[in-house]
Length: 110
Image 1 (cartoon, rainbow, N blue to C red):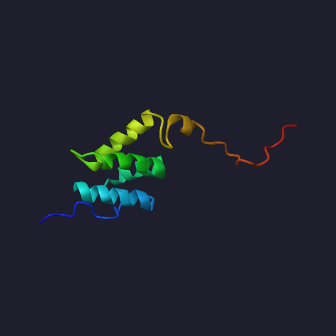
Image 2: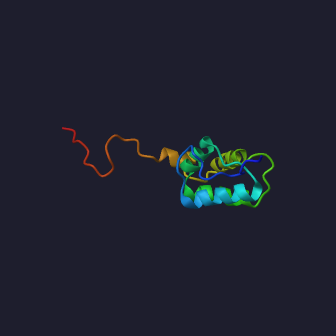
């Protein structure tokens, strides 16, 4: 009895954009891979749709020798080290962490 190589959608982790889900399903079916686990799905979610699709497009043109999850993590780390994707260090530091919403008047100092 064999299990399906790529059940869809994964029951754990965030809901990814439809385009990312479709690419994952295609890779799973073509290369008989299990779908990425929840931790990998979170990584893709944090990376953003365009960067995730870029990684998945690259993966789809190569033969996966071990696991799709492992390959995705490898590519996410590589993208971050090259400064691409939404979570590059320069983009993370640009996030506004101020408790005052952007555009709100600041309290005046008298």
